[in-house]
Image 1 (cartoon, rainbow, N blue to C red):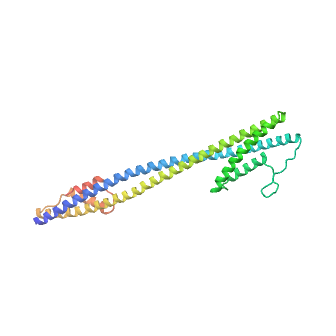
Image 2 (image 1 turned 30 degrees about the vertical axis):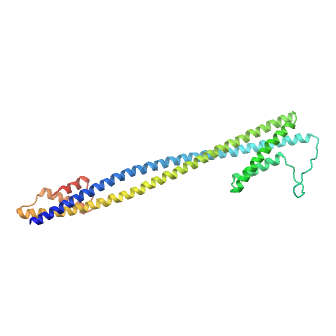
Image 3 (image 1 turned 135 degrees about the horizontal axis):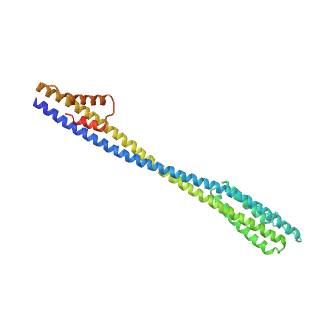
Length: 294
């Protein structure tokens, strides 16, 4: 009988140590889970803030694009007025026929005028905004726009130097200034729209980075919860085995002493074990109390 008692005591001691080990592992994984939940929620909060910043820049971009469209309309009207006044000035001057230039194949080509340069500039600018020029052609179009802009400025300077100071010329200067101001406004609005677009793209990249970090923490969270659940299951199994041995040890002591078991403690243990076996959740204090009963 002594060997039987010693064997039970050894098994009881081993199971008690295992139960303590699994309980501590479970608590440790639960603490890690809480930390990961906090970190994941923090990343998700940052994602929401970054999305708001991106949306704000998108709204700014759309507003500035609308301003660009409006300013282009003003610039086009100013260009028309400049052309009308210049045509009137030219109609009042003695006409001199300028021979048309010949192309590389001997064909007559239209003379290059300020209006033709401006029309080509506006056409290429519209095509570029619609994304019709990509790849290598994009660089060629940008270079052509730069060359056209330089020629337009030079031709305006040349015309300004040759025009007289009549009242019509004053109207022309005012119209040209209006056109130049409108063109400057277009450039500024386009620049602001581009800056807002670039900032929106930057915020979008940060959103993706933070979202991936949040997803990474969520994946870690699922793993830690699984480990915590596994440790908890092992802890419950250890408790059940421990109490089976304790029941057998009590029965043996009762048989030797010829006495009944301690009713109060036994009833309490049975109540807790019944709850545990039926799938009810026990508090940490109740589980530790089960582990202490002997």
